[in-house]
Amino acid sequence: MVPRLIPVVALLLLASCAKPAWRVRAIPRDAIQLPRLEPSVELELPPRGSVVSASLGDGTPLWLVHREDGTVSVFSALIPTAHAVAYAGTIAWIPTMRRFSGTYVWDDHGRVVGNHGWDMCIGPCPEDKDMPDEARDMDSFQVERIQAAPERIRVGRPVPGSWREIPQKPRPSWSAEPSWVRLHRLSVAEALAMPEGMIVAVDAALVLASAGTPRICQRPSGFSCCPRGSPRLYDVEGIPMRHVGPMVYTHSVPLLRRYRDGFVQYEPGKKLGAPDSVGTLGDTVPRASETWDPAKPPPVDPCEQASTGAP
Image (tube, rainbow, N blue to C red; front, top):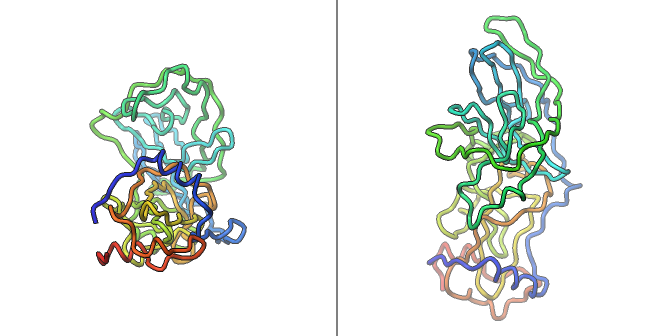
């Protein structure tokens, strides 16, 4: 089937006017029981001047900094939360600028130095006066140096980053830099091989298809369902079928936790933000849609119909 883009605004209007419809339900947050994994870890100290990625025993992503002067810091690679808003975005290291970059820019001591540059805005970029004028330093961890050969460190308790005032004018952009390093992302198969409760960054997307189960899979081309057998995201509800046709929402999911035979979000039960893309599986109204009771599961699975090419 040929994918067709549907304006997001129109879909939202349809959703607000539609009657309540059947959908795959999420597991309630209180019912999700994640094993408690031991976070403490010992890490080999890299050469002076190095910044390397690492992780705690539970998979929490880290940046380990060993400066030329011999000082060492370990930072969380998660963008610090602001005003109780949870967001599991990850921070990148830009070696050519010796800066960390996420929503904000930090130096190699984890101190926030300004807002992220805007040069890839979709539509007009925000005005400087609308940018945040304060932000948090990177969260860090206590570090104990272990005299051994090679030298190692033991990562201790977390230390929340302090708030600082920052200029509202964004920092120069990083996007034209010739090289930068992202945290390593696992394939879906590699992530599924991790212990239950483990925090993982997965090279995949969350795909919500009408009347189907929320699935995690390699980012599909166009607007398509995840392959049959793709792991479920248990703490997210599916989307209902509508008469405009079977829809597909695609979301980015920076971090997940292993759960059962699939995943939950880094913060289980978190409400999803706006999708990255919204479209339909095809240009035709699905068969049996005229007689479909919206309070019941559809008689025809739209993903199965799309994969078989059935009319």
